[in-house]
Amino acid sequence: MAYRLMEFTDFRAGPIVRAETGPQYHYFLLPPGAAAGHAWPAPARALGRSGGAGGGEAFVGIPALYGVTWPLGWRSRPTEEDPFVEPGLLYEMAVRALA
Image (cartoon, rainbow, N blue to C red):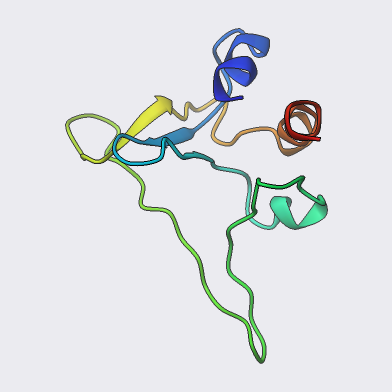
C-alpha cells in the first residue's frame, strides 16, 4: 500500500517509515489527531496517544532524516510541502486495499 500511495502522489506522499527487520511494517505519519477521524479497516491500526482512565500511549520511533537509524528507515521522507501523509487519501487507499 505504501508504494501505491507514493505512486498516486507522484512520489510526494509525505512521511512513511518502514521496519527493516521482522514483519515489514509501515507507519504513515499523519497530522496530530487525524487518524481518529477514520474507522481503519483491519489489520490497519491507528497508533496514537489517548488520555483519561484506561488510556494508553503508543509511538513509533522516527529515523534520522539522513544517516543510518537501523532498524527503521524512510520509505518516503517528509518535506516542507508534505510534512504529513494526507489522512483522507490514506484512508481511501487502505479501504480499497484491505476491505
